[in-house]
Amino acid sequence: MHVVFAADRAYAAPLAVAMRSLFRSNPAVRFQVHVLNADIDPSTWAKLAAIAREHGHVLTDARIRDDDLRGIVLTHHFARSNYYRLFSADKVPADRALYLDADVIVRGDVRPLRDAPLGDAFVAAVENRNFSRHRALEMSPGSRYFNSGVMVMNLVRWRADGLAPRVLAFVRRKAHAIEFVDQCGLNGVIDGRWLALHPRFNVQSDFHDVPYVEGEAGFSARDMAEALDAPVIVHFTGNSKPWQLLNAHPYKREYWRHLRATPFRQLLPDGTTPANVVRRFLPAAFKVRVRTAAEMVVRLVRRQR
Image (spheres, one colour):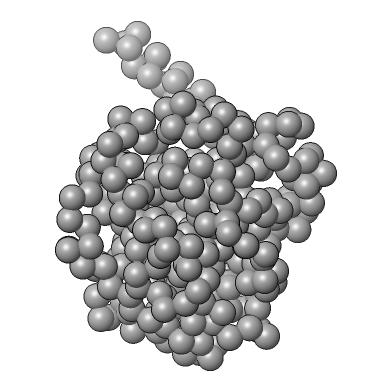
C-alpha cells in the first residue's frame, strides 16, 4: 500500500510518530512510504529509515526541487511545505495512494481506505464542518469542503486532469481568498468531485472541542459519536500540537508513547520553561493560591513605597 507524507525537517519527529503509529496499527499491511520533502538531512533521514526498516517497510525520499516550486505564492502563512502534497502524482509511481499529514497518529486498520471505491473522484476524504466560503473559492453552492490532511488520492485522475498545475494557478489567482494553501486550492478546483469518508478516518481537534450540531456537515451526529469513540486516524489540527508542553489534547500521551519508542525519544516538549512547567503541572487550586499570594505581595510592596 502506497502512503505519502509531506514534511520538512522541522516536522521530522511528528513524522516519526505518524509512521510508527501507522506501522504498529497495521501489522498485516506492507507499506511503501513516500516522504515529500525538500530539506530532510541525511542524519534525520537515517532515523526515519530505521523506523521503517524495523517494521519491514520501504521508505522513499521523494525530493521536492526548486524547479517544482517555481512561481508559488509565499506569504507569512503560505509556506513551501504547504505545497508538497500537490506533487504526489509526479513523485509517486502508483495509481492511488493514501496521503497523511505528519501531525496524525493512526490507531486502526487503514485497509478500508486502500479499498475505497474512488471511481472518477479525485480524492476520498472527510468533510470539514461549517464551511460557507463557496463564493470566495468559486465552488458550486452545493459542493462540500474536505480536509486535505487525510486523503485517498486518485493519482490517475490527478495526472489526467493536470490537477497540480491547476491548483497552483488557482492559488496564485485567488491568494487573497486562500486560508489553507493546498486545502483551499484543492477544494476550489475539485469543487465537490470527491468521495466522503466516515469521520473516524480524520478525527480533527475541533471534534473534541466543539459539540456537533446535526446538519453542519454531511455526516451525522451518530457518525461523529462513532468517530470519537473509535478513531482510526487522529489529526492534530490547529495551532496547538501534542509536542507542545501546554497542549491538552486527549491523545497527547499516546503521541508521546510513540515518540519515546523512536530515535527522537530524547526531545522535550516545545515550550518547556519553568513558568510553563508550573502552569502545566501544578493543580489549578494551588496555582490560584500562588497567584493570589503574589498579588497580595505586590500590593503590600506598593503601599510601602
